[in-house]
Every structure is written in structure tokens, then in C-alpha cells.
Image (cartoon, rainbow, N blue to C red; front, side, top):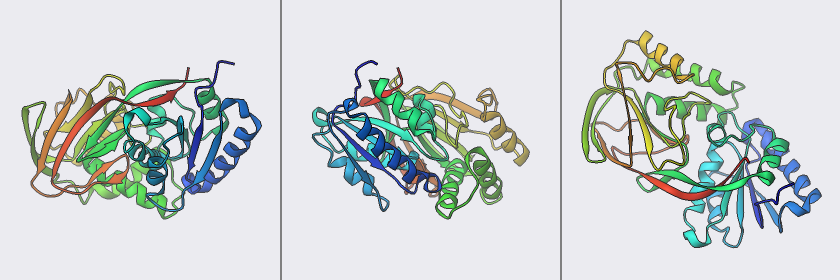
Length: 309
């Protein structure tokens, strides 16, 4: 077996992830690390109890070589936010054990989803890679930032998961989309600049800025997005399609086949300043972001992340 890249390791586990499967995955992780002591030079496992715990735990992880986030995209987002509070010279690398319903960051990294045994095998055989993040109004995000209908759906799915829905993945995304669409079909007006070039649009309902290609449990909204190219990919509609057209776009986006639509614009950028006429729904990795003015930028190669060999 190749030498494990983990070193001294802190596991931050969300036991409520994926309808409580996070607790089982945390128990498995404790047993795995105790049984295979050679894969780390010491380890500790902490369980979150409330929102924000993972950020505080990660921000206090100075002295560890690796922080492993166990849970869905929400806990990974919190852990990334905590790690970014540590000066780069002392910042641990990130590993993930994806246990969630969306798992879009796991898709980007190529990590096994909802299978802790396979994910740990990938980590101990993997290697650390300098990886991009995005940032909005000072908040780091590792996968996705969206506004409008996209964000309203993402926030609705998060609320429904917290309330204990049994729906998962793309079915949950679709059902939230149908419910939210009737409330948000007129869209939001905005103007902004991407790398200094002006853009403006009214009636925008689809507006995503991506580090990696997917959101909403595998919808390939920016199919060419890469976490190692130093850029953020953008997809937004500049023409408002009728409701059947919106449904068709989301269906095509499941497989990344929507990008040629005349109602959409696709671009890549390093930084943007965006102003909405009215406050839109906005989310970063499933977490709500408020405001009407948004400063967005790429943070190239800013976090070392363990990826499969």
C-alpha cells in the first residue's frame, strides 16, 4: 500500500447527516482508525451538535496535518470555512467522507459517496492536491454559489432535509423545483461586472457560479468547471423562458446538455461584483447568504485537498 497522506488527523463528523447515517459512519471511522493505526500518526474524532460547530472545530485544528469532514456538503462547507481562518502555513489539508443526499463536492473530487469504507480506502491511498475555492462577501465556498430559483430550490431542499423528508438526491431537487417555480417565475433583475466586463439582465431565474461542475445532487450546471483551473464558471439566463422551457432546461442540465440554449450565457471569470434590484434567494454550498450586493472571487490553489489516486 502507498504511504498514507493523512498524518495527524482530526475527523469532524455530523452524526445527523443523511437521516442519521452520519452517526453510523462516525462509528465506523473510529473503528477503522483504531484498527489501522498505521494510516495516521494520531487521530481524534469530534461530533457536531449544532450548526456552526464544524467551523469552530476546524478553526481550532492547528497542529493537525489533516481535517476530515464527515457528512454532507453542509458540514464540508463549515469545515472549509474554519480551515480558511488558519494561516496558510499552518493550515491542515482537507479530506472528506461524503455522507449526504447531495454530495456534489464528492462528485467533483471523485470520492465514493455514502460508502465510508470505500471513502477511507480512497483517502489513505490518495494524495493532496492544491484546490481552488470561491468566495462571496468574504464567505468561502467549495462547490457552488447560486442566486434566484436555483438558490430558492437549494434552500428549500435543505429545509426539507432538516425536517426529515425521506426524499433524496435529484428527486428532492425536482420536487422542490416544481413547488418553488410557481413563486419565482418572474425572476430577479441585476447588473454587474465579470473581470471588469459589464453584464446586465432582468428576469433572471437561473444564475450559478461554480467551482466544480454540479449542484443539486448531480445537475451539471457548469459541466466544464474545474477546481484546479483558477477560475469560476458562470451560467445564467438572460432571456426568461416559459415554465415548460425552464423545466426542459433543468432536465437537460441533469446531463450538462443545456449550455447551448439561446436563453443562457456561459462564461468563466476570476472576480465579479453583482448588484440585484431586490434581495434574491442566495446560497453558497446550501447555506443561506443575504444581501443585494455580492463581491465574488476565485481563490486559486488555496486549500490542499486529498483526492483519490
